[in-house]
Length: 280
Image (tube, rainbow, N blue to C red; front, side, top):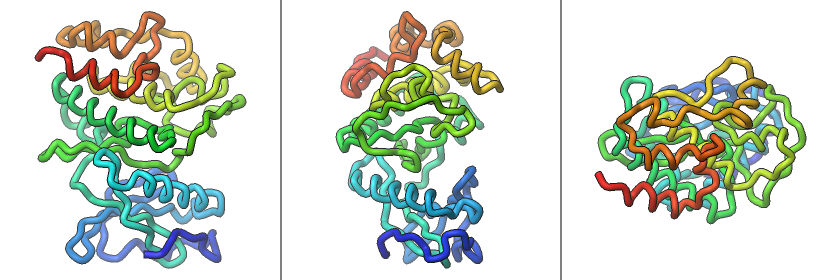
């Protein structure tokens, strides 16, 4: 497979979908297909025709490069390379037979032990990402996948990931924010005059675990500015109050005394140790 390069006519959409493939997911900017090629199961990610612009193609190339730096990490989806479909490139990923946690949560709940087992796996994945000096910036239920038969857990979608060092963002409109608003660190909105670093992934990780434990997000509103304000100033209901069967030691690991999701302030190894040491 060739290296990812910009097509000569970036606004020309691909003539058709990849041959012998099945569309499995449609996002705002991308299409995800599943196929079998030469006996190997693969996932293809390509941009929607309307999104094939020079700017997005540069970001697409960066995604491929960042995933390449994490090659071989067991908790990160692997990339086989890049394939050019008509005038649109596609990143070819491994297919580990997994579904997103969001898809799974849509049909059933996660038990406490299962949630914390997934949490250990995600913590390991974040440790590998940050060790490579990369910030994912969009950790949420849709970007963590699990094979329900084997229990294998991996982190996917590095579409807005970037290299460290830390970012100091100016004020950003909620309509153009990068990331999933219900999960992102308030600092990513530019409203707190603070730098954004790897801890933004821990914050999103905390929101994700909260949702897995309780079945709901810590804050829910259709108003984007209100949601940002609540993440900055409002205290979420502790998980053990929403679900009495959740031990307080687990609940305390998600929400600190100021109401902020505390995983963002905790090194991966400490998160791992807290989860692993709880008596079942």
